[in-house]
Amino acid sequence: MVISQGKMRCNKKEVKPFRADKPRVYLLDVTNRDGAQSYGTRMGYIERTIINRYLCEMGIDQSEFSFPVVPLEENYIISNLELAKLGYLSPIKLSGWIRATPDDVEKAAKFKDLKHINLSISTSDVMIKGKFKGRKNEKDIIDQMVESVKRAKELGFETIGVNAEDASRTRHWKDQSYLEEFSLAAKDAGADRIRYCDTLGFDRSFSIYNRVKQLAEKIKLPIEVHCHNDTGFAIANSIEGTMGAIHANVDAIINTTINGLGERAGNADLVSVILSLKYSSGLQNEDILDPKINLKTSWKICHYVSLATGIPIPPNQPGVGSKAHSHESGIHADGMLKSYDTYELYGPDDLGIPAKVESESGRRIGVGTFSGRSALRHVLEKNDIETKDIDETLDLVQRASYDVKRTLITDELKLIAKYPQQVRRMI
Ligand SMILES: [Zn+2]
Image (tube, rainbow, N blue to C red):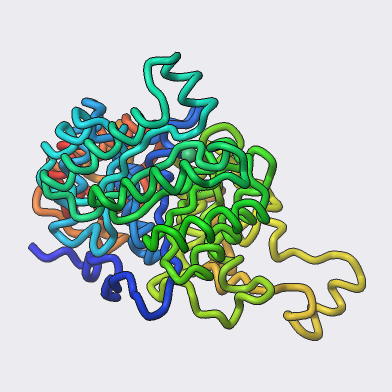
């Protein structure tokens, strides 16, 4: 039976390969990894799947969606990789995060359709000493990373990223010799890119620009820029680190999370990063951003993550906060009434913000853990969703609702109705 909800493929634009002639900025979202692992954040597997779908609709190049060595993740990983093959999560690349050990690489390789992987190992003195307590030195770190990359290459991973954890605190900020030696060894072993991790939000925009530019000039590989927000610089550092790579004529891949979710003070907020690349000084006409990006998905994706995590969107969050397009003072309101560009760089339409948000009051019928066939039929018909088997759909709706502890939304029902086998596996 055909589902009357249009084609399920989420982004029709082709994935463009990294280009040697003109460097580009791609986005790799880590909400389902760095965000999912952060304190107090638990999202259901159906929610993480919908996040992958929305990232795909948004034209994000890659979602670091899982921990392949965590047994609990297995069914979610298998079902999402199947959904990628079925077109529901295509063309976004789904990638895993592991430690840079041959053992982790072999465990990740058990998922035969997992083709993209990032291997992480600490490179800073403070972490090597603090974590390994004298059992490893800088040379041992390189040896272990090289062995892991070679094993990943042998096992057929298509994209191998090597993460230099705590890259910003690796030696003195003016001494890049070890970071370069580490990265060149990774390249020689077969790595496709290096992730420069500002793991503690230590960098300033000036320092990250210089360090990434110098590193990129030396290694001539795409650089991932992974910034945390401990001093409030995550977005600025992501942009300036990226410009360092672009000015060294290599592609940059910015790691983001939706609503800035992530360890401690969080990571670089996805929508803010896109807004910076599209609208900030000197970048508006640069055309460096991946052309697949569709900013109009912003409102939907930010509100969904807020729903999934229970963390409200701050009113002053760039782009999607409730005050982000609000004006009251006389001079501002007068300017806005005459011309929108007097006090806004971008409008609510650019982010897909609806003119009116559906009211929370009034008569509503939803479906959840204790729903029956009648309510389910009503909601499916209202949303033009067909199902092959109403009893199976009801069973999955009840289980999924129990898992996420709330009434389901339309896109979750569409996923359940169209791909019951994959949903059953993950919940
Ligand atoms: Zn991180």
